Length: 352
Ligand code: 13P
Image 1 (tube, protein in one colour):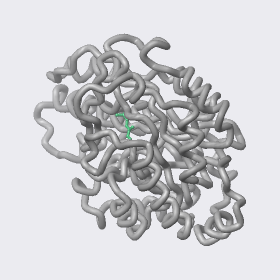
Image 2 (cartoon, protein in one colour):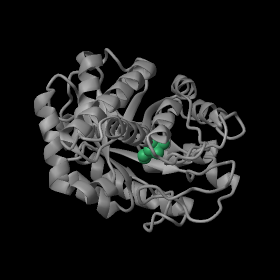
Image 3 (cartoon, protein in one colour):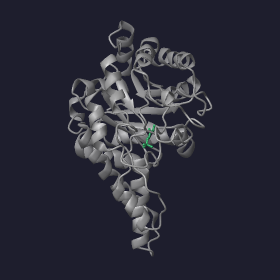
Image 4 (spheres, protein in one colour):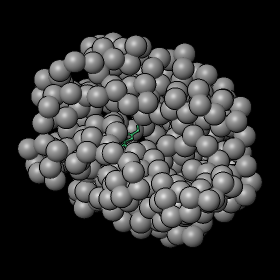
């Protein structure tokens, strides 16, 4: 199966009331793990690469590894999405490279540190939408800055994150503005800020409504019932893996993530794409530390990578099942990007 657009997958998810995890990829083991889990559960897949991933693996390696996944698991529809594009130029480069979806993150300026104004955000996002839709490529925009409602800090992670303190207004997407933003930009999916942040340190306690604002999801969905909502910073930070990491010499302080039940609640109210990176990092680190601790004489790196792949695949399966996307892949027939272009042209794919 060729790569499909994000829009096709999210439309299917909306039609059948489920959500899809979007897992970040950087290397072969992560791709293997996600794809093995998807094949075992018959789930469609969103693979997303950040600027950091491109720097780590190299653009050509990332592209060829994803092509290898398409060839190895032809029964699974895969969308290749660029995470947190800093500028229209970055998004265009990804489209040229074969990404079927891009995120233009105009919530921050091109330095990925300074919050951008509403008008700046609309203008850069609109530019990307015009170019992307002419190629059948989907676009995710972001309104509101990710950050902790407990501390007001965004925290830099993988090259993205506002610097300094943010106000609650900046960290909570306004429903009226969200409607206006989608109307003016024509994005296919909208990332919203509800108190989540990237990385392992999201909450100092199990989150309640004051620090994880699920009511915003409901309010935004009520105004934009046809827009696919995206939750960033949605790792659940499994306590089991934190325990393993600590037991085998790691030092991760007390911290909590977004509970899977809260994500499922979001999915009930229009969340279709759920970004997960940290959970994979934790599972891989935990599995490798554990094996190194238990077998200090082992020196074949493949043994450590295999343990990391298995831990990641197990985690991905749990998310595919919890979000309701297991069993959906075989129901999806790929729509070529050229047909998506026609649909955008005829106005079939309007979000409002
Ligand atoms: P986590 O750090 O919670 O995994 O979030 C990843 C993310 O949102 C990537 O865009």
